[in-house]
Image (cartoon, rainbow, N blue to C red):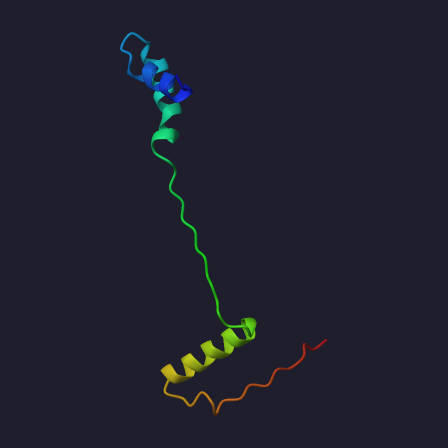
Length: 81
């Protein structure tokens, strides 16, 4: 008999004191109903890293605003001291 089966037997036995039955039932719950979890996995096929992702996002935003995304040019400046 497994530990899980013992817990179920105690939880379902009316001769066992109610507080012990409740503790046995609480201990058995994780084995009956596993905890739900969610995971997110992002797979990116681009090889230009975050710079490429930012550039594509900038172009999408420009297109959504009716602007010519190719005509815009941004200068990257080094940080000032």
